[in-house]
Length: 370
Image 1 (cartoon, one colour):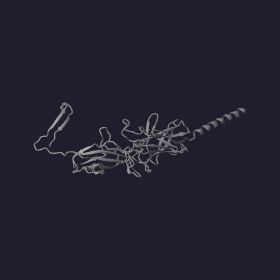
Image 2: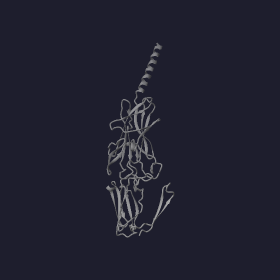
Image 3: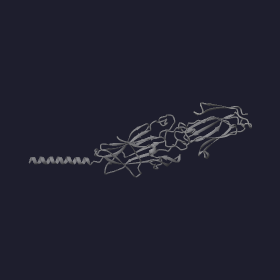
Image 4: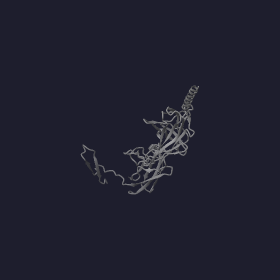
């Protein structure tokens, strides 16, 4: 009788142990999000928000893409993690990622869209990849992360014994063009990452399942002179036009604009003549003859004496309190005269080195043509 009771006790204990193991395996994991490490100016807050700012584009530090402020991208991680459940099993997590502008309009993953910002107007704006290019780093690969539809989701699979996955966001260079005709202030854009509920496979963490990455415009900076205007010598009664935002590039690859604004703000210009008796000056903000780009135009007066001069002052204003100015001098020179018929000019040339083998260097001196 005692042996039979002992056998029943052992069987009951084994049943209880098996029942406990099954219950443990059936416990669903809990999945949530949190803000992880930040670097290079990225910051986090307690409400599951990662704050980034676009980099400022400048022309001083070569070898770093001419970035003069924040040589590295402001960045930070959003961490998707699980706790509890069968850690030795893979777990598919439904994740939604959308990107919106400051008014809540959904922006694309790649390419450009039309955005509207109060006080700025309607303009073209980049998508998520150009602005923040989020990615996940695994032990074997770097995986780009793209947006989903506003009602859709993607599957993020945590492998056995993998408890979390980091999604890294970076504040990239302001996405306007290098010409300040296009504003660089697009307002705050948001990447919103949501862990979507899947009651059959996991529960949502009570601390939150939605993380927000905010991307702000660069810290305001004033325009600077990039290509100073040279002094000029012209004839009386002559007119000239100078493009202030030439679309070309210098030999070193930098733009030929006179002023450069690191925020890519649209610049407006004012000009003035130091001596209105020598020349008059004006500016056309959108000159059709110059590709709808701003042009400085001046005309010297025929009544001004030879040798007289006047400064021209150009002021660029970014509309946000930042200004820069350039000053150059225009001098009235001797007008050209025609040679008497049949008379040859007194001109000497020096040519070096051997002209049949090398490029020519020519220096010429012309005597008074009288």
